[in-house]
Length: 151
Image (tube, rainbow, N blue to C red; front, side, top):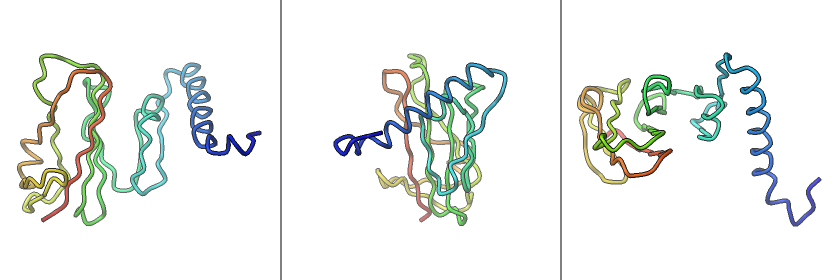
């Protein structure tokens, strides 16, 4: 039971308790692939990926499998695919990778998209076939969020 001064710790303690339970379950059953569900809306707790490397959400696409390389990537979009959020995760830093490249299929190839934070424009065809390169800074366990909107 939390006292009033600890009430702001509730969510954090809940999450850490859930992680502890998931650690026990995934340790006892390493051959089972547990899947996470974000209940729609594109909510993603990156910490859950440690225990459940596959997460399902509304209009959610896995772009790169965490089982195939040192990276994984997921795309969230609205039904009309006017807004796109891509999460790219890298595990261990690799000095030989000059940048992190992710291709973004499942979009309108004939439309243009603007990267929100830089206002750079890309064609849907370019994003799907060539991809977009992100910096590859030194350090392990990197998470990058890319936001796009259709022009």
